[in-house]
Image (cartoon, rainbow, N blue to C red; front, side, top):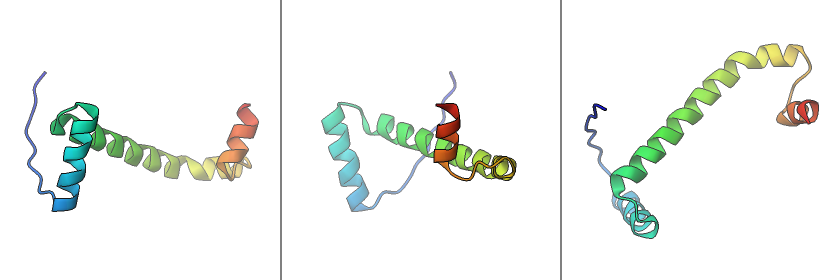
Length: 73
């Protein structure tokens, strides 16, 4: 698997949070950053997809998450 390097600047608070999370979980800082980035990108993808399908869902009466959960349960 090919990898690439990303350099980011962290303010002191974020650096401290990252270091504490690293010590607590036993994961290195890069692993935590990759997981956070992956999670955020997936959330962004989900939100974009949701935005695209909402007009279709609303047209069928699905206005809230509860409407969907009620229908599928």
